[in-house]
Image 1 (cartoon, rainbow, N blue to C red):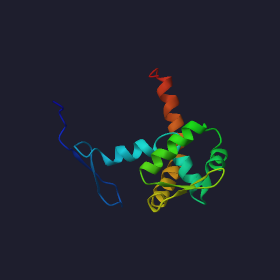
Image 2: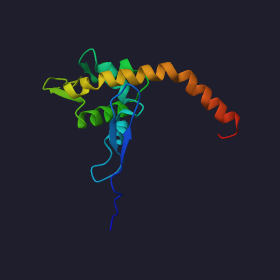
Image 3: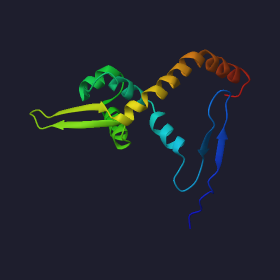
Length: 140
């Protein structure tokens, strides 16, 4: 018999911001965990950013991102398509042509994604300093 934790709501408050309630557990899963699992991987944000300006074929996307393997890019695209963030169009040509683009849902994520990127750019020196201090205390 599988036991499920009762849902637990957490209210996040911040000065000048609307209150946000997050459900951490329960039958439906935690929405923030599910989203972060997807976009928190190594490649998803890069794929979404690369697709922002235009529809791209697989090999063009592969070159734009750079150091991702074909297998990993394919897996990332499938997961983003599964979540409705990316659309895949297959054209019956020889050789077959496959193009990827952002869906409306994917485009709706661009602004929050930019905010996350801005935060990371702005606070990276502080994060690095905190990590160095942690290691210096012998916590590594």
